[in-house]
Image (cartoon, rainbow, N blue to C red; front, side, top):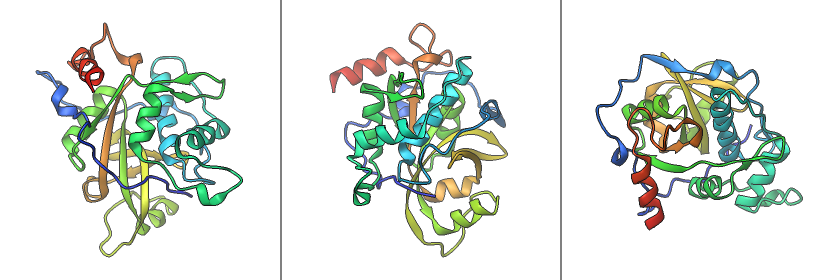
Length: 244
């Protein structure tokens, strides 16, 4: 299994999730998520190359399109092609498999879009940063918008836990192996993320300990008249984006 997220590097132009919340907002339930509607999340090349930021993004689009009653598959070839376009990865030169900065991936998703297995591209309308490790904002964003992208500094203990079917949890003394990107897709007691083609539980302690960035993506498929039904101010957000 491969990692592939470069270290988080906040930018002054990052737009923050909390700036666009308008009350009163709903309380997220104790359990939520639509991950069980996906029969096969697919590996999408992340066992061969460090394309986790693109594979995770494709998993997010799978959630959105399934919720919108138009399930859309993605392919290893398409995800790796987008990874090459963003990172400069050359399949003939393994030394170019260096991973991606999440900012670059988000900009590509907004401007170009990810290609699905049928050759169609899927864009996001906007992306917003969340405070790393802020569990309340993470759960609210995931509930309102279907999924949230999480960047983590991945400890070696988490690979052992994954291989043994255990939740990701904090282990004292674990060594960081690199960066990884996973979408949060549900809350079932623990947090539920998608990685390496399957769902994986993550404890809140693991999240707050290892998260170095988190992102909320606005998908046009869930908006009503340009605004989230729960009060997300899309016109304000788009105005800010256009002024950058």
